[in-house]
Length: 93
Image 1: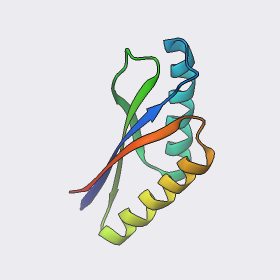
Image 2: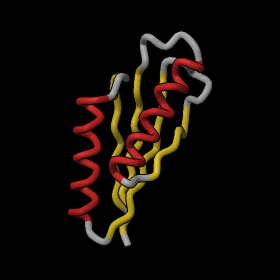
Image 3: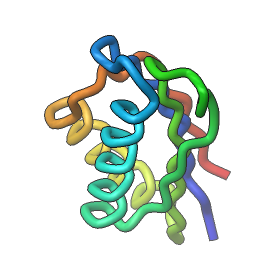
């Protein structure tokens, strides 16, 4: 069993409150979970309204499968996410 993880940092320059941020974060988490069958949670900067840090985890039996899913997920985020993706940390354990 292998676990692929991503730590994604987003910048939300238009968010003026935590409520604005929360709407976007909840939407991103729900879409990633339903589209890619990954676990997603906000893991840092919960009190900063213009920064969102999400953790993503995917479990599979091969590195190639994990790479494929995480690559597709990142491509989807770059094309469909309202927030700017500013940092990506990727690990396979």
